[in-house]
Image (tube, rainbow, N blue to C red; front, side, top):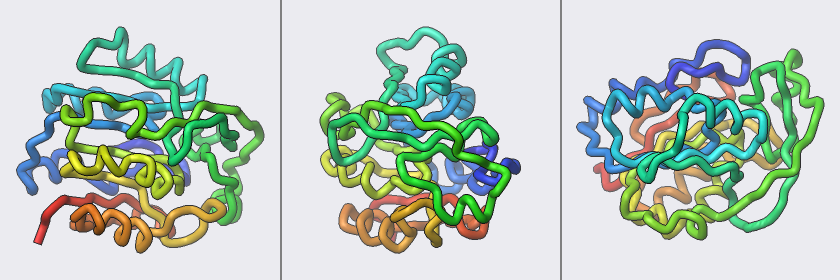
Length: 220
């Protein structure tokens, strides 16, 4: 998300972590990174000396690379091979490799197939899904969520309502068209997160139909 490859396979620099960190004078206790892929942001988090980190990545191939990149987990850095949602169950993911698996989603691709025809979803994988509220016991150690789940954001947040009470900052991918079937739109996220006193203060439509947003709690 901070300089990763976006859905089109192009460099995605839509939100600058350093700029946001200094502009809003963030005081980060810990980060919950949902949809971690290979863990590309891990080095950035280390540079900012984030004390507590937890990464969620459901796909087996991606998780193996994530493990190799982060190294041996510690009590302050944990890795879970789980998808997050509003249920605890097994679920199918639509998987592609042309974009290094970054466009893979629980949701069936729709407009994505037209916008990025070079990205073919040619396999599937059954993964474990859990609710964040059910798996994260030390919620008080985290106040920042970074989420990149290809349109499934609203379902993840529905399963994170207790956790959201301790969260101050959110960076999430957003959509304004149906890139995936029944994917969350930005106005739905605005409404849901607004119930927890979050306001969208930074938006960048890097991919025209998709982009990234920064939500801040209690911002007037």
